[in-house]
Length: 295
Image (cartoon, rainbow, N blue to C red; front, top):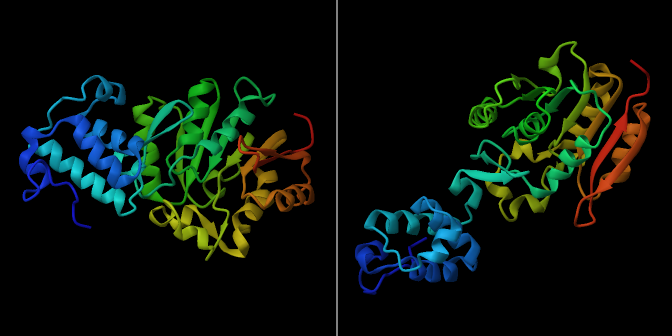
């Protein structure tokens, strides 16, 4: 897509007249292009290494030629559909910044419901927790940060995703979190935990929603699976008892129309106190169940 920025002289490229460009004018042009002032501010703040608050106070700050060029390139990529989280290389989740790239799913605000539910469970002070299909590590690392005494493990089948999780582990200084490569429970062998949590792929293969918004840029392996999006949910439920201690919990995120299916699945798998919880938008989002028994 050709760059629409033209700078003060319409016959010259945007970055050629950078000395004449100031932050507020660059933002006005980009906001028009992106139809989003917020995204324009995020991209320019990223290029300048400043906060959005700084932009408000320094709207007359001049852009260098290199800054103008980089900003224009990012605006073009965003206009072409590249997710802003991948352009910035990060996304906030539960109050912390997590590095992301196209090897991992972009953390969603609705997934924070998993964290809130887990933190409210009656788990031991030194609970053993595993996050299946960790991606960026946002769930596992958030739990480790919120509960430093918990013993947290995370698995993923994708080495590239684990590399992102490792960068986040180092950035957050959470070296105690174990990252294991493998398919779902496979790398855990016979280990058992007080909690199994997962935000698995649950969109049906071929679902038209996969071609909308940011989804075309995200890893398909992390988004969709066979059997109308239920294949991984089934495997998580089937394998949970082997890896849950008596009195342990399983929590999974699921699709908006899958609550009844997952509740029935967990009941059939022998779980008790099964329920689905709505997110802030009123959409059924997370199912949980308790493995019966006592320690």
